[in-house]
Every structure is written in structure tokens, then in C-alpha cells.
Image 1 (cartoon, one colour):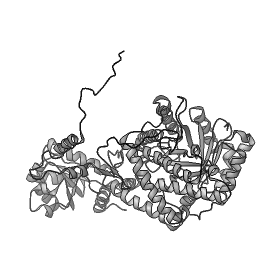
Image 2 (image 1 turned 90 degrees about the vertical axis):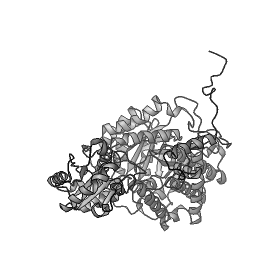
Image 3 (image 1 turned 180 degrees about the vertical axis):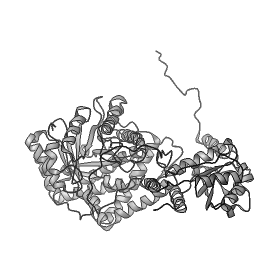
Length: 616
């Protein structure tokens, strides 16, 4: 022990931004010809990232003088409470939607016995029947486990059934959320907004169930449909404002109404964006409550974070375990009071015992072994997180004001404004998914076409709904995989390897992984003369060939091999890299296209199947 403080960087001078910029220029200009060096502005532009929302991610953040604030107080950016006990983490809430009553009852009890702390039921014709609610909850003690609902069909009937269950058990024990969310129902189904029932249910909870919230502001319908981070925030705040206004018109003051609302939000594998989005929502809602006259201590937004359904992939589903872990971590660090981690096989069908256990244990390990939930706002003060929170809050407030100017959230839903904003986000995201600047591990990058499918029970058929159409990010790639798998024979692309392994190895690996996204067969040459390569291609039956090698070998062989292939009747020849590497004026006569980093992978794979003759 010593009285002298330990200075880990004490012997090093603090670098200046100018020194950092000089090093950046040195790296980015390495190898560039004299007179063609990047300026500082151009170098910074290359290092910046722009999100789907148009937010700017800088390459370097530095200290600011902005006040950090404290957890548990206005504006609640840093959380709704201060963690004062190591026993307080978050509510581990498992989703149950299996219509098999016996199985769901067993799953609920197993979850509660093994670490879950509350129950979330989805009620509907493709989920748990409303008349089965009491049966699946048989054995659940409501004073020990809060119960929350969601329904995209009849929310009032679901709430009535749950209240009946609570009254039978003793109203004083009731805790949870009735799940009434009229605008969320409109988003899911396309029905006209009808808030008429909500005020009466709020009165019921205020009078008889003080530990129950009647209303949810469910952002998941928008996330499922592709809404951006900014739009999810704006839609959440606009919906909350609509509910406060409706309650006030019914004679329920905002101070009471705000306490009846819980927000259900998405958490995804973009951990910093998720952390900042949860922090920004609390700040925005606190401001709404402030101008609505809600007491300062009651302005914190309670958030139920659910790992995003849209990020879950059907193919290589094991990667979903990693996505769920990152999203759970982000939700906890972002200060969510309640978290649900969806099982990794959710896209395939109904989860089984193993996938449910993995989802539950993801949270338990994070909370009890990694101790993530024992620190208040661990990301607070991180310059990047604070900047991102500020950007999200500012831009979401602008969109919220646009929604208000258009007549509010109900009008924005019925007029198509919400759908238009989501469509714009989907269009921009589709470009990034297609060129893999937004990669999907196991799907668009590092695919495993030979994987064994999971054995799952299929989900019941869902009724046709006219609301916002849900779509997972990976669906376009899954459609390509399905198209190739349905073909007989399976489509093949021949990899013509020119030169030695050191020449073709890197590009062969790149092209093979890219074609593996759609599950093509990949016969390959063993080298040789153009005539020998042609013979190997003809023997394989392939109609599409990609040349793979280095620029030096291309200059010597690419055009000769391509010409021989075309003259032998092979209709399509591509080159891995740039055609200019073939160093010939004839290259465009014999080579049809290029395979390269940053290309539109979806368009290329689809066109390749068209050229081969695979049915759509």
C-alpha cells in the first residue's frame, strides 16, 4: 500500500488532436502517389460513418463540458433509479405464445423456477387463446410474478381475462401490465384507431390495482416493420402524448396517466445505438411529462426492452445466440427495467425447452455473473454514447414535432406518414444489406449452406393483417437460398482457379463465401491450360464461371481462358476483382462482369440464377 496514487499513464504525454490527425493522414496516405494525398477533410470523411437515420458517427470523440447529470433524477437520461443494492438488477421477463395449454403452463412454471421474474403472454388466435389465460397461469402466484399481456386482436378481452384471474387470486397481489395499446393495434392490423376503452381501464387500475399499468406504448410493431432508431423514438413519444391527451380528456390528470404507461422497445445487436436510444427515450419522455405537469419524480419512462425480432435470422440460427447476448447487454447498460431475450430459433417456429433455457440464461448470466445490472448507467460519460444520445434525442424530437404538426400519431398512422417513413428507412437499409456494408453474420457473411435445419414445431397460421408488414433483415438472403435449394439440379458456379494457390487463394475464398450466401454448388478447376480448364467446366455442367487469380496472372491468362470458355459454349464468364487487371483491349468481349467487395450481392446472386436458368 502507498499514499502515492497510481498513474497508469503518468509517464506519457497527453497527445493532442493535431498529433492524432497527423498519424491518420500518415496511415491513409501510405502508398498514395505524390500529389494525390488525401487532405484532412477527405481523410475524416472516409473515417466517418452515417447511419440509416443520417446520424454521423465520428472517428474520434473528446471530452465536452456538457453536464453529465445523475441517475434517478431529471431528465432521467441516466436511468429511472439509482442502483443501491447488489440484489437489484432488472426484471427477467419471458415471452409465452404457444397455444398448447399444457406446454405453456409447464414452460411458465419452469421459467419462474429457474430465474425468470415475470411472465409475458401473447394472446390471439395464433398464440394463447384468451379463454385459456387462466389455465396457462395455473400455479403462478401473482404476488411473486408480475404478468403482462400483448395482443394484436382483442386487447380488451385479454385485459378482462387477466383482471378476472387477478380478482380470483386477490386484487391486492396484482402486478404487471394489461397491454392496452390502441395505436399499436392499429399499426399491427390497420384498423381505425379506437382509444375509447383505455381511460376506463386506467381508472380500474388506479382504483383497484395500484401495482398494475393499464397501457403499453409498444414500439415493436414499428421495429418489426423496419423503422429506424430515430423513428422508433418519435413514434413512442408521439403515442405516449396521444394517450396522455386522451386520458386528460376523460378527466384523468397527466400525473396519474403517466404512471399508467410502460414503453416496450426493441434492443438489437448495434449495442451503442441501443444504449443511446433507451437513454434518449427517457430524456424525451421526461420533457413531455415536465410540460404536462407531471411531478419531477414521476417522469421516468419505464422500458421493457425486447431483443429485436427483425434481427433474428432463419439460416445459421446459432448466431442468434450472439445477437441476443449483445442486445441483452445493450438493454441492461441502457437502463431497461425489464428485458426479454427472444429464443434463437424464433424465426424457425415455436421455441423448444433448450432455446427457451438459453434465452433465459442469457439474462441470468449477464445479471448475476457478469454483474451488468449492478451499476447505474455504466455508459454514462462515455463521449461517444453521450454524443449519440444527444443526436438521437434531437432528431427524434424533430420527427415528433412533424407528427404533431400532421395531427398526432393516430393521424400519422392512418394518413400513411408512418408507413412512408418506415419505407424510406427500409430502402436505405436494403442497400446496405445488399452491398454488405451492414453485414449479417452467417447469412450474408460467412454463410454455412450445408447446415442441418433445426427441428422445430411450426407456428400456428397467423391471420392476415393489413397493418405494417413485418420483415426480418435476412429475408432477402433467405429467399435466395430457398430459390437455389428448390432447383433441380442445384445451381452451380464454376471457380476457374488460375495459377498457383498463392495467386488464386484469396479471391477464391472471397467468391466462394459470396456464392455460398445463396447456396450454390462450387466446382473448381485444378489449374492447367485454357483447354484443360474448359474440359473441367464442361464436365461439371456449369453454365457460369468466375475466374479467380491475381492481377499478374490475369494479365497473362484471363482473356485467353475466357475466350476459350465462350467459344466452348459457356454463356457467362465473370472475373473476381477488376476487369482492368486482365490488361487487354479484348476484356469486355469475353468477360461479362466482375465480383468485388462492395457489390450488390443480392442483385448479383439473383442475376446469376437467372443466367443459369433457375426458376423464380
